[in-house]
Length: 172
Image 1 (cartoon, rainbow, N blue to C red):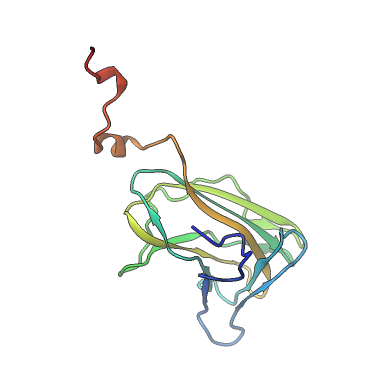
Image 2 (cartoon, rainbow, N blue to C red):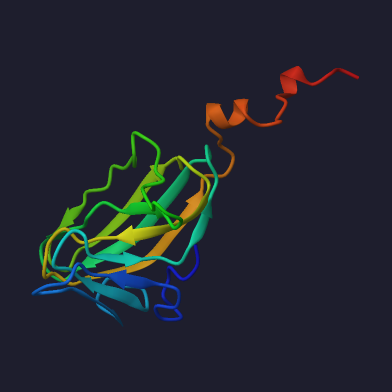
């Protein structure tokens, strides 16, 4: 995924708001806790989202999602959502979902450094949706990334690949 440091503004990023009274906003800015530019997201519902540029996923390869979220008031960050770009656009995170030990809540002025691991359930283009569970609180997101965990493959991926373990290599 590109653009997660927001050094070029919101290039490639979009936002979606459910609408109605108190609709949210996503603007470039800076606040204590942000390293350079960050996107200040204020939501009115948990459905409001800051959406990343498209990126590709590979089935069976664990990935890690990470970001910093600086809170302007006591707040809770919503769980990240990774959805397919192609219809029907559902979640591409295989059960049991994200594995994380990160606390999703914090006090005013604190920075939540989120890190969650997941395995994609399907390959192809996807988009990360960042959310704020506490309506009306501005949260500064920065250092957003999604990366494959290098050197590890799930058992299912290993069984379905042409990889031959060294123990099964013919001797010379």
